Length: 258
Figure (cartoon, rainbow, N blue to C red):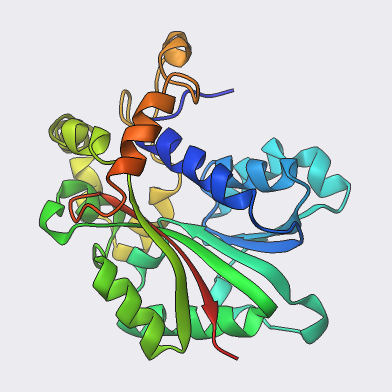
């Protein structure tokens, strides 16, 4: 059991509500991080595969989901999702990624969309969460190896160019994350500035296993304050501002045109 940041909790509560509308099936998750989304999918009855470039991230996923891996409900892969071979009998119902697409350059971003279209079954969909609001670019984007922050129009353009349809889009974590952003930037500057010396690929690998006290990791005592129940009022406020151009996260669902 871990204590999650407020913004992460708000994203997960929103994701839970959306997943309830999707029939359970097979999934691929790219960039599982600590496995919070993976856990929700498995708990809901999904079966699937996670990909990550970092062996350390995958090792942590193996430890967390040892039972599910043993039962054949979860497969883990250290490697590049874009290089994964697509077999017709292994296509999936859902492709999901959280804070992944912003790491891809323009060519890789296009390949991501096209490769995902080949992986999806008829009627399948992609769910993505990406950082939003380019004017809020900061040191955390540099540390994490981001190539961009998205806007709604940029996401829609990306979908259209690659033959996808955006089915649902929403801005998340406003205004909580915006209010906390100066503190967040100060903590990142203090604890992670040295990571700027790493290569872009190393920063990308590192982004899934960051440890910054009071930013990504919190004392267990704060579980009483930071949990899905206490964040519900802020979740409802978030829902009032899903169209805000200042929201720091975009959630989208998309499907490829057939």
